[in-house]
Amino acid sequence: MPSVDPRPRVDVRPAVAADRDDVVRVLARAFADDPLACFAVRGDGGKAAALATVFDVAFRRWTLPAGGVWIAEGGPGRGGSGAPGVALWAPPGAWHPLRAWPEALRLGKAVGWTRIARVLRGIGRVDRKHPREPHWYLFAVGVDPDHQGRGVGSALLHAALAECDRQGAPAYLEASTEANARLYARHGFRLVEAVDVEDGGPTARLMWRDARR
Image (cartoon, rainbow, N blue to C red):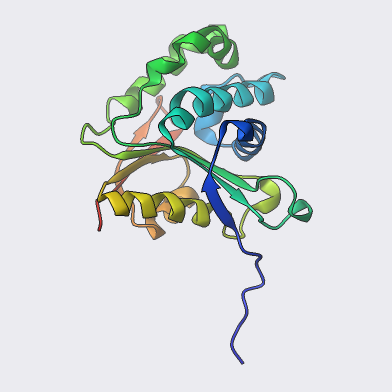
């Protein structure tokens, strides 16, 4: 008797501005314990709001205007309500961090004013390694904790990488954990270099996926 996959189907579509609340909620929950995200934002009682700020800015300023956001629907968990996952990408030539300049005060508060110099040094270590060749850049892919381990992340990656392949474009990302790096490797990414954002970590694993057709 053939096996049957018990997991409900996960549909993925391009996000729109009206998805903002779902996008921010999912990513803030998904990255609550992520090593690189926790390095980048304050660690006190304002941490949850800080993560929400960063992903709100990333959605509105860096990725949605470029048509680089995918959102999952219909996944398992919490009765199937809400978006189970989100991926924020920047298409080739569209990654411009300075587009967030109007949000500088909000981002400064999210980082923590006494931590800004330290965080900028760490981010700089990674940004200096960012490839110059045109590519799709995955800023973040996150799955709500209630939906993790059920194929949502893979569905999101597949949707965006299918577009990369349609264009014959490479892709790049920075994995924050070994587990994440293994997931990306299954989708064709290879480790290029590991960079500690500061001495002793955390570590950004720089990964590249060659162009395909």
